[in-house]
Every structure is written in structure tokens, then in C-alpha cells.
Length: 151
Length: 151
Image (cartoon, rainbow over all chains, first blue to last red):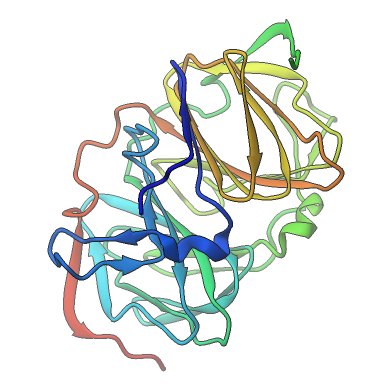
């Protein structure tokens, strides 16, 4: 299912993905494995017309784990756990994950994760090109003098 | 308060931020406003040794709003709402936000948001340099043949 509830303006795209518990409605078909969609995985880059970062929103059911290790060529990743619990490993070192756990993994890190609990695990994965942020994030912002009003 | 529970390896940094409800323990001091820390705002870039993206984790209390508009010079932003409800505006167009709302805002978008509900609002803001993702996010990943094992 694609995201039905979407609004767009000149400088933004907004989408209502629904509650985390409903994430299984989205199925991701990996180009290398046609006909074998993964439920509970949704990528946001194209949906939101992004050009700097890919973000996936994920549900990993109780008892399930990612069955393979992976590394990256140029991208660093951040895993941000929203709800539930599980385990994450990088180069064989294991970290327990739960609400509020954040993990950055550099391209060479050999990573895998699992939900070894009895409740579903919800997390985000954010990836972008290592070294691509040249500017300062605070001074990149420009505060306007105009007072905020709401219709 | 800084993040006390942190582990680090050769290719990763992992931090336990705690439950969303406890986010007020973190206070952000904006360089332009010393001595006026904002509770419930934590930036992750330096903590996680990132070089491609800045991510903030935020709690906006019931009834509060960001009192100014801002734009960006080169960075696109993604706002991802985790829990609670409120409103977001870009160039005067208003979007209702709640669990599962995601909004991308291009640099020129004039943005502000508020929590006009009676419960606290939790969200992430992700910013990175517009146009900086040159590669394909799927082919940047390298799947390893080795079987996943857990200690």
C-alpha cells in the first residue's frame, strides 16, 4: 500500500503514515527480490521529495530478526528505536535496544539486529552520505522577525 | 544533562536517551541565547559522531508553540511526529500532526509549529544538505554471506 493521505505545497510534502501499530500495511519490495515484499517497511525519500537523506520507518515483529549482516559503501546510518525492545550488533558487539536507543553505524560496521522480545519493535533508520554535511546546522537556519500567526 | 548511558566501538556509537516522557531532562542552550536553556531538546550529531545529518529529539509541552518562523540556507528538514498532536505550518499552509505524521520542508519554506493539545508532543527533526545524497541508497548497502550469530 502506498501512503494515501498526503498534502503538498511549494516548499513541503506532508504525509500521514498512520499509527506505528499499523505499519504492516506498508510492504517494501526490494529490487533484488521481486515478489517477496517485506511487510512493515516504508521508505520516505521519494515520498517526501528528499535529496539528502533516506529514512525508513520499520516494524519488526516479535521473535523476528534481520537474517543477514550488511555494511555500506559511503553511507552512515542512524537507527532510532521508538517502541519495543531487541538487540543490535555491530562487528560482533551487542547493544540492547528499547525506546530511546539511538545507534550510529559507520559504513564499514558489520550490522544486524533482532527482536528477541514478545512485543513488536518499531524503529527508524536514517542514512546519508558520510562527510556530506559541510555547513553548521545552527547558522544554516534563518530566524524571521515576523510574528507567528495561526489561522 | 548530557547522555550518561553511551557505548562506543570502532564503527558505532550507541546511546540510551531514555523514554520519550523523560526528554525534559535534556536542555539545549542555543549559542545565540546563553543562559536560556530549552528543556526537552537534544541534538544527536556530535553525540553519535555523525558527518552527514543532524537529528534532534524533541518534546514540546501541551499548549506551547515555537514562537518564531525560520527558513534554512542549504538544509532540507524532515519533521517526524512520534506521539501527541499539534499543528505545523509552511508558508501559511497548516497541517495537523500526530503519531505517524512526516513533513519535509525545503530550505525556503517558512515554518513554525505548535502543540495546541492537552498532551505533550514528541517529534524528531532531521536536517541535511539539499542535494547531498549522490548515490543510490539500496546499492550503497553490501549484504554479507556470513550467517548472523548472537552470543
